[in-house]
Image 1 (cartoon, one colour):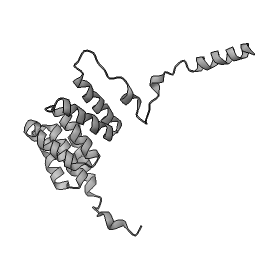
Image 2 (spheres, helix red, strand yellow; image 1 turned 60 degrees about the vertical axis):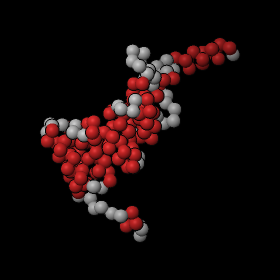
Image 3 (tube, helix red, strand yellow; image 1 turned 90 degrees about the vertical axis):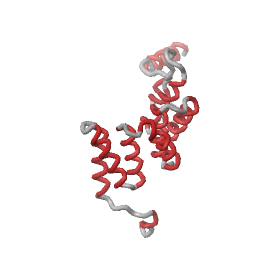
Image 4 (spheres, helix red, strand yellow; image 1 turned 30 degrees about the vertical axis):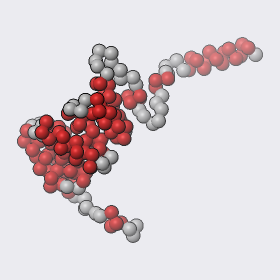
Length: 173
């Protein structure tokens, strides 16, 4: 009997050989968002920004919002943190927070492609297509070969084809 149990244990452990506990993620987060991002070569303030960016890339906009906010508490003048905070606020439809972040960013990086694309995308999410077009075209003038700007302009062209409806418009369905 002990021999059978020993054989089963060896077979079970051999099956688990290629799997580590790091492959499993808690709370529906992907593997990239739960990995240890600590880097001992840099000051720990950078870690908050790295975590926030990983959360945003995974589509966890609530977690990204919270992480960017923590990063801004540590370094309140970091334009990367403000830009990420604004983008995650936009994705959560917290336009009051994103407007505040864009107002903070405008004097710092208001003429850069990243700002123009993000603010234009914010306007696109709000349904302000003409304002979005203005910002996308400004970004296009700065760098016509920018792939993100080209994608944003294409998305804007596709958005014009769909009718804009009010919230109560579909009550009969």
